[in-house]
Length: 459
Image (cartoon, rainbow, N blue to C red; front, top):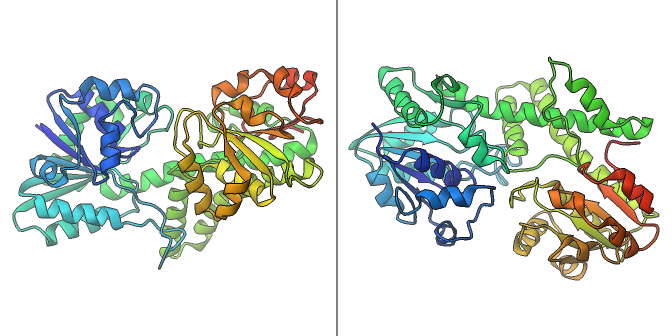
């Protein structure tokens, strides 16, 4: 029986997942390790580095008892029977596969450290999103760098949705575990099954070979992103024809063969997984010479990028083809509500386009900090002088849109649907334009007030 677990990586996956395991398995000591001292200090404070509804309460219930956040990485590895690897696997920005392949440098570093600190039998669990057959590379590194240990490498991909992560971990659709189909591999799989079985019904714990598990994560995210790009492509047609994309989505969603989920049109998908995993899938298909398959999945990314640029262009065109020196109140920067994660957020690219048109952007997001906003915009090429001159952040939504020429909603935070729109209208330049990239604003009442309202996917 596993009684000591270590997780390398205290990010969006490692921290919440290990907190749930600790809460549901009081007999297991769980250590979350990271070399980033600031991040570990945050996990040990009242201001966690990851915002998720219910996460602070979950962490507090077992922190200091059987859940520990520490920078003592090597000691934690030595003590653990099972080591989860939940480090970042960003898209490569250099060399072969740049812009598509996953950068596995952090995974390799973790594997080498595990090898150096291990003795006896140890189970290594891939929790990071990785390309197919990464387990083989990890196993090669482990065995080549350790004389006193025997390893089994499992794939246990994460299927959490940010914003509902705690709920998803409590009651998941499935847990997927892949491993070698040898006696030793099957024993290792069963060890991890027993951990999850403390709160998850056995019939929801699926086991496969290693490669099927690794590929399933990429394919699941690709299929979900494909649905979003598909409905977003139809949103453009709806705007031209006078159809309503929400009504179309509801109509097709009632078809049991299609279903209603992930048919919500928006300014575009974001987050840490969808784009990265599709690009990884594209690269994998190219590697195996499957050019038509590669092109098919790459179109999902192309459509998503087009939706963001189309939305930004519509703002400029509607405001009489210029936003120069006009204040634009932007509401939301996180890629979705109930998270402070901005990775690949559609807001980054819409705000970039507005800033590059010399708009004066006043931005409000209830959870995203100024430093993160500046870093994201700098990364996508907005010059520092433009950020300094044309971008400001406010402490509330009302200040962001006061004296503005347009209000732009880019994240579906609940509070944005319940603002004092009468007061907002009175304090905006006329005509008062509003652009809803998430379909959450009260259209009828806003139009009654006099707003010129543009909702994505509605003609």
